[in-house]
Amino acid sequence: MKITRGKWSVVIAGVIIGLVAAVLGHFGNPGNMQLCIACFIRDTTGGLGLQTAGPQYIRPELIGIVLGAFIISFIKREHAPKGGSSPFTRFILGMCVMVGALIFLGCPIRMILRIAGGDLNAVIGLIGFVGGILTGVLFLNKGFSLKRNYDQPKLEGVAFPVVNVLLLVLLIAAPALIFFSEKGPGSMKAPILISLAAGLIVGIVAQRSRLCFVSGTRDAVMFRNYFMLLCYAAILVVVLIANVISGTFKLGFADQPIAHTEWLWNILGLYLVGFGSTLLGGCPMRQMILAGSGNSDSAVTVLGFVAGAAVSHNFGLASSAAGTTPNGRIAFVICVAVVFAIAIFNTKKSTAGQGVRA
Amino acid sequence: MEYLATFHTHYGAVQFNKRRNAEGVQSKLMPVPRELSANCGLCVRFIAPAAPNPSEHEDMDKCYAVNEYGEYTITED
Image 1 (tube, each protein chain N blue to C red):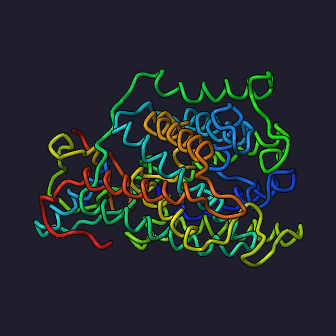
Image 2: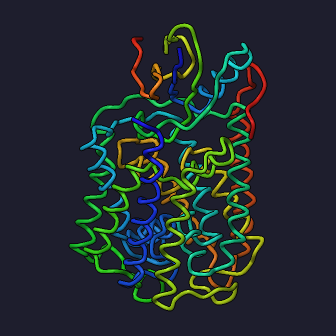
Image 3: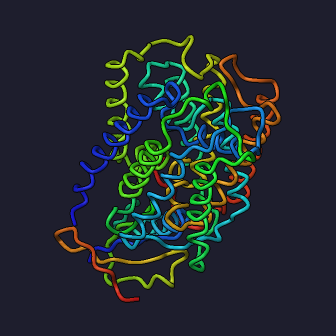
C-alpha cells in the first residue's frame, strides 16, 4: 500500500477519459462537447420536458457514468448509502453551479475539452474557475462545513442508480412523452450503445481514480499536491492530439463551437462553478460518481443541477453562441450572493490555533 | 507513533490539525490516501504517544496507525 502507486493510475485514468471523449466526438457528439456533465444534464432535463427552450435529449453518457460508478463501487465494497449533510443547501448550491456553468457554457470537464479544441475563451474561463476554488478554500480554512453525513438505509443508496435505469428504459422505448431535439447540439449525438458504454467506462475510471476537477485543484493550491493535475493534463493532451488528427483543432476566440467570446462572463460563470463546487466538495462529475456510489446528498445536488438547468433555459439565463443574456447576468449576481451567504452562514468561528496555508 | 485520522467533514480535519499545531505536535493536513477511502476528503497525519479515540474528536471518522513502510492499520476505537 504505497501512496505513489496512485500517480500512474490518475494519468491512465486521464488517458482513458480523453480517449473516450475523442471517440464520442468522432461518433457525433457536439464540437468540444464530447462529454460535459452540465450540458448533458441540461439536455436530459430538456429530454424530460422540464425545459423547453434548450437542447432536449436524455444523454446515455450520464446514465452510464452513474451505473458505472454504482457497479464498480459495489464490486469493490465501497458502495455506502450516506446522506443527511445539509441536503437542501446542497440543492441550492447545485442550482447556482448550473447557472454558472450555463453562463460559461460548460462544466470543468468541458472547460478542459474546449481548451483541447483550441478554444481560448475556456483558457480565460480557467482563471475564474481557479479563483472560485480559492474563494471556497478560504472558507474551508475558516471553518466552513455543511455538517457530516450519516449512514442511510440501503434503498436510499440505490434509488438514484435505479432512477437512471428507468431513464435508460425511457430513452430506448422513446414514448411520445419524452423530447428529442431535431436540430442544434441536442440533435448531435453518438449512437446510444456507444454513449452508454462510454459513460460506463468514465464512471468506473472516475470512481477508481476519484477524479474531480475541483478537489484536484483544491489539493494543488492547499497542499501543493499536483497529483490530480496529471489527470487533467492527460485528458487535455489526448483530446488535443485527437482534434489535430481529425482536423477539428482551431486555435482562437471567435467562432468556437457552442461558446461565446464575452471574456468577463466566461470568467464569472466558471468562478461561480468553482466556488459552489468547492463548498459542495466536488465538481459536477464527482457529484454524479458519488451519487452512483450511494451518496444521497450528491443525488440531491444532481437534482439541484436539473432545477438549475430548467430555470436557466426556461427563464433565458443560459448563454448561447451569441453571448450572455441580460437575465443571465442578473441571475449570476443573485447566485453569487446566495453562494456567499451559504458560505458565510455555515462558517463557524475557529476555536484553535492559526489557519493553514491557503 | 505516527497516525492518520480521517474525518466526516473538512471542518473536522482542519480543526483537528489546528489543535495539534497549537499544541506544538507535528501534524499536517493532506488528501486521504485512495486505499483508505473512495471519498475525496482531507485527513490529518500526526505524531501522538497513543491513538486518539475517534469518538472524542469532532467529526473524526477513523484513525489508522502508520508504520515505517507507510502501511495503515486501523486502531481500535
